[in-house]
Amino acid sequence: MSVFEHFRKEEYAFVEQALEWKDSVETKFERKLTDFLDPREQDILSSVVGKDETVYLSFWGGSEGCERKRGLLYPFYEEVSDEDFDLCLFEITYPVKFVTLEHPDVLGSLTGLGLKRGKYGDIVKGDGLFQCVVAEEIALYIEMNLQQIGKATVQTERVSFEKMLPIEETWEEVNTTVSSFRLDKMVAEMYRLSRSKALPYIEKGRVRVNWRTIDRPAFTLQPGDYVSVRGQGRRKLMEATGQTKKERFKIKYGIKKDS
Image 1 (cartoon, one colour):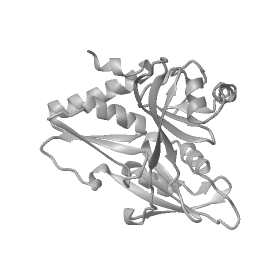
Image 2 (spheres, rainbow, N blue to C red; image 1 turned 135 degrees about the vertical axis):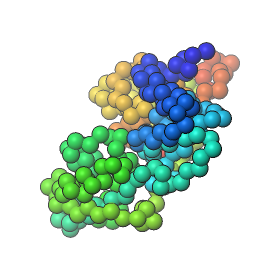
Image 3 (tube, helix red, strand yellow; image 1 turned 90 degrees about the vertical axis):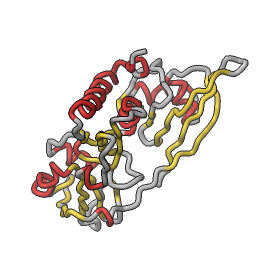
């Protein structure tokens, strides 16, 4: 059985990349540090590496609760520490009395600097500040160039990871049944909506599956998929465990709770 049979066609490119990383570590006995990966990419990489006896895999994004993390593939005889992930934590302060900034504002400014999303991780909001985890190789560039977010002048400072704001990721698990794994029916079930109310979210591009916008109601979900509806939070299809006597599918999904 080919490893590709476990994934969608649109994921094949990343699967191929993961296989190349693994093969490189196996043959050259050299470490491979990835860019920041979203949780779906982390799941795929973990599946590709599996329980390999020669290649080990670790993830780190600054704290245990971080969503986006860098992956490190390394030979079985080596040991790794947090420092091996080459991360830097920035604290971004702004005149909170005069301007309001939100997560998308920071994301937009980093994108505006020409930075790929894989070069920075979680962005965390605090009281009058934001913290952002970035790859060490772009830290100096951010220090020199991130001076404004929206209309606000900001101060950007490197800080120790000991000062990182706490992030806690918890999921509430729900067991239920569905008649189909179609996206419209799954969104309706997971967000407690009627199918007629779920459809506009999908058709207007407000639904993302594994961090990609999906506007096709007939798109089929698979266990391991992450789903988000703009403004409504995130869900994850964790398991499909068979069918009932009435031929409905038994599933378990998670509701991401705010930290």
